[in-house]
Length: 114
Length: 109
Image (spheres, chains in turn red, blue):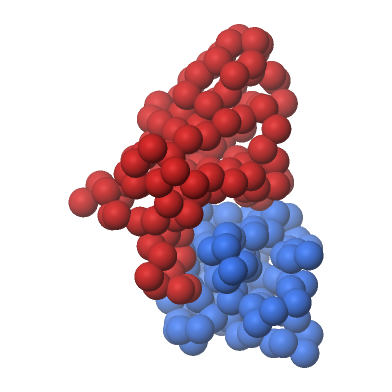
């Protein structure tokens, strides 16, 4: 059981480039989330999804897009990379049928925009 | 609005000393609170949740609704406790966690 899998683990982008951060979970969880973790700033919610076909904005959605075509996958898209998006990105998931189930996290993707 | 405040960025103690990592929250509903830990080069993981009233790795945390606090405590710190600790509040309506900014605990020999 792999849990939450994120790829890639590291990436360097040039300003203006685009990329997709992949997230997959094999636990059949309904809820999935993307967070970014900036140094000394804790985690902030970018986007979340309560099920396939349903997504919503979190605290810091600008510059990002998401889609949820399947229960398993929740990719995060950066269309025009900016230096402010240099961060560590975490994907997480939670099942719907356990009201207070904490979220399961992936290992993270460290992204640098130069 | 929900908010979680961890006032200390860094807490440095000696091995064997007591530890208290502070967490205060603001939330209009009934709070569900958690402590997460991130050891060096490892993924974020749940340490404990207040509804379980459990002790994990010697850590405990009591929810104090009067003081809106959920401080994490351990009577005798160990070097392996050195890590980043995050307090988190669950928005039960949307299953979203709101994180504090974290406290780095450094336990010296």
